[in-house]
Image 1 (tube, rainbow, N blue to C red):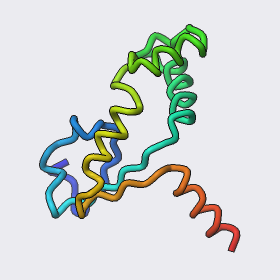
Image 2 (spheres, rainbow, N blue to C red):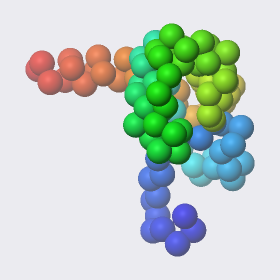
Image 3 (cartoon, rainbow, N blue to C red):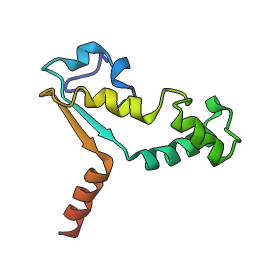
Length: 112
């Protein structure tokens, strides 16, 4: 990242706890987009099924959902991810958005 020209735009799925601490400086701007837990669970299920690193998950939706609800999924569960970033939402350089709200705004703009 140091070799990238400024300004840098870096997309990440990292939890806040795993994010580099240098990124939380006043110079940085962070936009976090959180997703509805139901949408996230479905998306994560299909990711598990399609990703070789997960062994192309062959289990049922019901089994996966139980794993998801108990945070027994790779990279932790939805609540840890969103709450970790929510703890930073009061910081001036962090903008915490909900995916559904972003979609509404985009839809409203397209309608005009």
